[in-house]
Length: 148
Image (cartoon, rainbow, N blue to C red):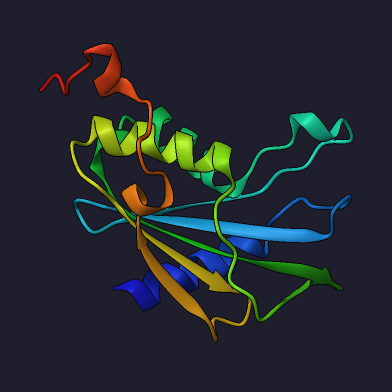
């Protein structure tokens, strides 16, 4: 399944709006029911308003009422060159994205797997989110629990 998830993230990166950085990132989330939801980065002329691929896909899940179904996320990215994404180094989530992923993971009551890959998928790293963001602050620190 991780190959399918990585491929979905790579395809999503092809839809990135990255005219300023020329760095496209795609993210794909595997849900409990086996479905996959994707997102890509969306830059803005006011750089601070840009959205990372991970936050886009998690906001999409939230809008669909599926945030708590998250199981795994794959992140793929690289430099844009004439609509082709290139790069042989894995892309890892920024600190903000790690925090946003922690929110989803804690609401889902599980640690999630994070796949980080290069644009050509030649290098893939696999982490537990808790290893990428040890000692996080999240909903559990505020006394929030899953309300089924």
